[in-house]
Amino acid sequence: MEGLEVGAEGAPYGEGESNPDERPGDWTVKKVVFIKFLMVMLVVGVASWGVETNMTYTYAASVPAKNVQTQEENEDGERLEAGKGVDTELDTIEVMQKIQPGQPLPSMILKDLDGKSYNMGVKRDKALVISFWASWCDPCRLEAPVLNELYSKYKHDVDVYGINVTRYDRLEDVQKFSRSLKLQFPVLLDEQGALFERFGGAAFPTHVMVDRHGQVREIIIGMLSEGDLERKIEFLQKKTVPLRSE
Image (cartoon, rainbow, N blue to C red; front, side, top):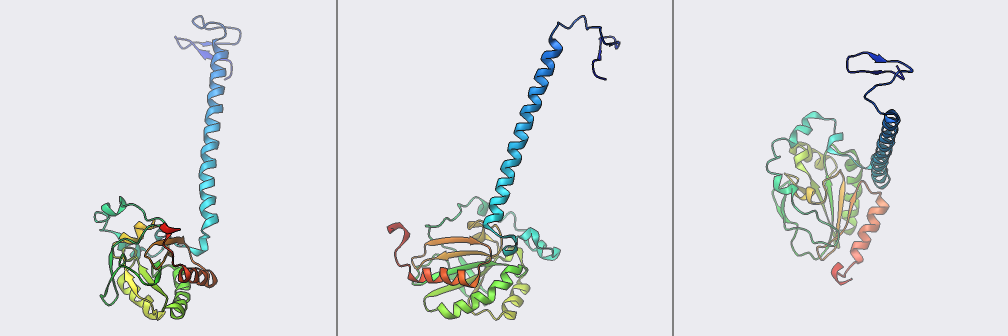
């Protein structure tokens, strides 16, 4: 009830009565301090909400939701279990420096579905398009035939590697995916997700454009249209000067 306080012995001070231990003006000071406290908390709350909102919209604007799929969005519980049991092995991966455009591909050996080894950091004579994918990723399934077609068209000048992040998948599903879409380009297995993590490991598909000098030109999260993919491949095909010399 407004205007009431309780004294030391529990008896209320009614209207017109004052607390003998309280100096005049103390209650006014308390109210002012309390109001200022509420104002500060309101400002801090609004500022925090604004930061979170801006971050969300920045991501949504740069990566359309329909063009990407994260492991958390995969509704198949069995596939989600595929990532368990390797956390200890990934401890060292998580502290590795992320690869940025302008840096070379790391020297990392991955095997394809037939057991053939590919060294990512080997000296190249052709540009390279890397597509990180998973068999349960719907945008990946839509984009794979486009990559197939462009690989057939540009394979003399540009390589395409479809890298399955097997940590979040099952090998039998990867094999079915490759067979059903009749993929012509090499399908490699990033079994522990080590290379994927070096490029951010955010969502599928993730594309990495690499020039013929082995330097990363661009990292793209999300499905690309056929026109965008072809333009980027043509750009890689023409690019002959290393980034450090530009």
